[in-house]
Amino acid sequence: MPRIPPTARKGLLTLHLVTSLGWLGADLVLLTLGIAVQRGADPAVVYPVAALVGTRLFAPLSVLVWLIGVASALLTPWGLVRYRWVLVKLVLTTVMVGLVLFLLTPNLRHAGVLGAALPARDRADLVIAPAVSTSLMIIATVLSTYKPWGRRPAARAALASRDRAATRM
Picture (tube, rainbow, N blue to C red):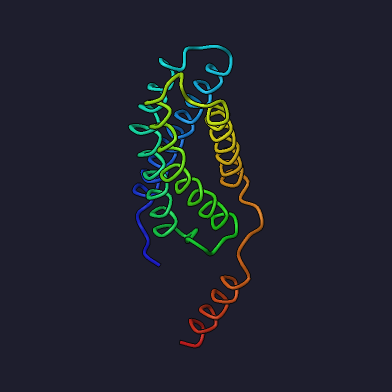
C-alpha cells in the first residue's frame, strides 16, 4: 500500500472536505430552488438558475469528491475496501455521482429549457432528488465521523496473513 507523508495526507483530507462541503452546499441550493418553485417562484427564472448550478457546479463537484475520496482511500491506511464504512461511502458516492451525471443533470437542463412549461411531476423530481442526495451526503458524513463496523473480514484475514508472513522472515 503506498503511503504519503502526513502533510500530504492532511492536504488531501482538506481537499476532500472542501469539495464535499461544496457538493453539499450546491445540493442544498438545488433543493432550495426546487422548493421555491413549489411555493410559487417563477419557474422561468428559477429553473435556468438550477440548470446552471447543476451543470457548472454540482456535477463537477460530484466527480471531484469521488476522485479525491478514492485517492484518499488508496493513499492512506484506510484503504478502498478494507473497512466497511469506507466501502459503504464508496458505493453511496458512486451511486450518487452516477445519478447526478446521468439523471439529475439532464433533468435540470431540460427544466432550464422548459421553465414554466415543465410538467408538475418533473417539478417534484427536482425537489425529491436533492432531498435524497442531501440525506445520503449526511449519512456519508456520519460514516466518516463515527467510522462504524471496523475491518471487513476478508481484509482482516489478509492483514493477519501478511503479519504471519512478516514474522517468519
